[in-house]
Length: 350
Image (tube, rainbow, N blue to C red; front, side):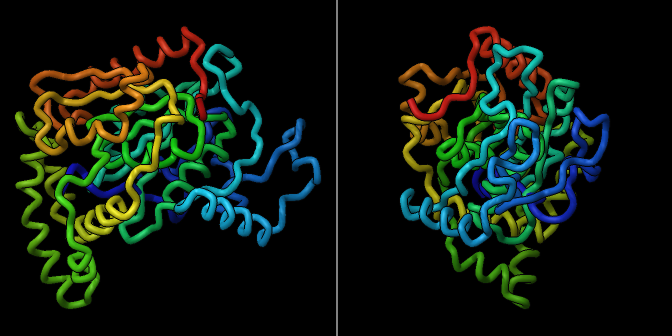
């Protein structure tokens, strides 16, 4: 399957950190995160004191749903609900101690939040929060996936986030950027365009009670081949190889991967030329999963406008979070420090 061609998860159930633990708010001394509220989990507008908005109550659910439908019609497709005002929004990197940076890691397909734990967890501090959501194994709409990002942003109340999208997660990050401002954007081994489209009937068969089980067993046998392609031109470290191969051999993993690959085909990236943010692309020179000449098309306007920095790691493939974790994190930290030094904040329409 193409470059982690499917998606991320964890949109259902209690908050978690991508590694099975309960998610905490770093500013609350380890307490549980704020409760969800509002349409798609977005908190209602807050007043100056942090309470309810000017009216004292959130808009009726019916009115908010109508606003969502109106936005969808205007955008000609999937749209998030109108964004409420939040404390500290937008966050400007030049604010220093006044700003809390929220990093949201979006994994590839097939993938899970813990895939980016070693890369992004070290960024956690009293001024930085890290969220690593895992997409649900079953089907989910693009609106729900974007709504999960929106919920995390509202939960932390930290303003525009920094999105780190790996492979398929880079596609999801750009879908969000098309509608919301971000403080920064990192695309790691981006897989933005499906290079080998799958047939929707295959997904239907995967869901069928009998045929699905038989087909899933056959699909799972391709885990070894996929792993070799993902880590080429090198090989995965022994511990990583055994762990990842065992997970990739689960039939349900490929069921979800097929579903999210079709979702990506059905929702090509909208025009992004007018919505830019301080951005970084890090990719391997020998990526056997994603052809950069094809993957660069959706963001070529950003490249030409100088809004995007690019780093190429020689003799590296697609699986950078596993093969080049330390150098990848160093590149991200260095880029973000530069953005903060220059006073770069969230950028929406230009």
